[in-house]
Image (cartoon, rainbow, N blue to C red; front, side, top):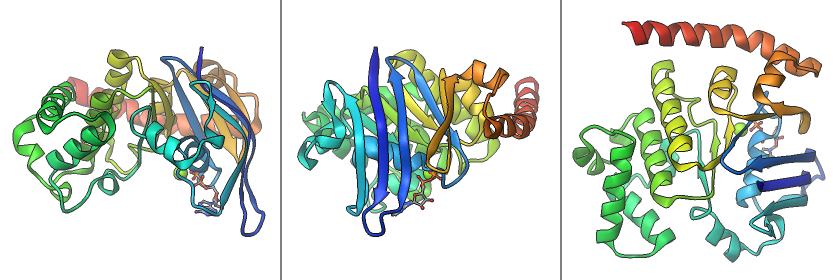
Length: 271
Ligand SMILES: Nc1ncnc2c1ncn2[C@@H]1O[C@H](COP(=O)(O)OP(=O)(O)O)[C@@H](O)[C@H]1O
Ligand SMILES: [Mg+2]
């Protein structure tokens, strides 16, 4: 069963008619993880922004994105606000931007839960405690009373994952969530994403330029270049036998990096 099905998605800038994404079709299967990879500027973020309806007003979309029997591209803003957060949850590269700098983590977390799930602060706090425990945030008590700037990028992403756990959305979209983290922290955060998948069975779209991470997390992959899909399929198949020239280039150059990553992790595991 497909949770999300995008057909002939086209995204363009209405100010100048420039086509940003063209004829993208892909689907996200239930309980699975779809990776979107491709060079910077290839349209990965624009594609997932179309799913959650957070494009700038001058950006237009054509085609269709089916979710839960509805075409997301045809939903009025109010309906999209209902879907965003509760049903489709986005995690961005910069954890800091997701939090209000003037609020403690606890009050941001509480507000998000109450806004999306209703209920009282007390209920929210119980959910927060359970979710924080799941992402094994040590000293969770003290951490919740901190402000976003007092936490590291890795910690903030783990809090985001905890929020996702508490909201139990149908789909999580993570747009390069580990790209601004150092390698070791990246490893830890990727493990949390794995746990999220394992324990919640949530379907996930994961954008990353790190093929090592993609191989670890994703079941299927879509390779984008210049706003178009150039290759798609099960991760292992695409990695073993890349058909498209650009995918071949990506796999060969990036696997060298991934090997390096693996070595680092092994050093850490046996240290
Ligand atoms: N806010 C915007 N308004 C108009 N065009 C944009 C906007 N953001 C991005 N673009 C265009 O969309 C292209 C793809 O961007 P993006 O989806 O962010 O790439 P990626 O995430 O793959 O790095 C960019 O090269 C740019 O031309
Ligand atoms: Mg991007």
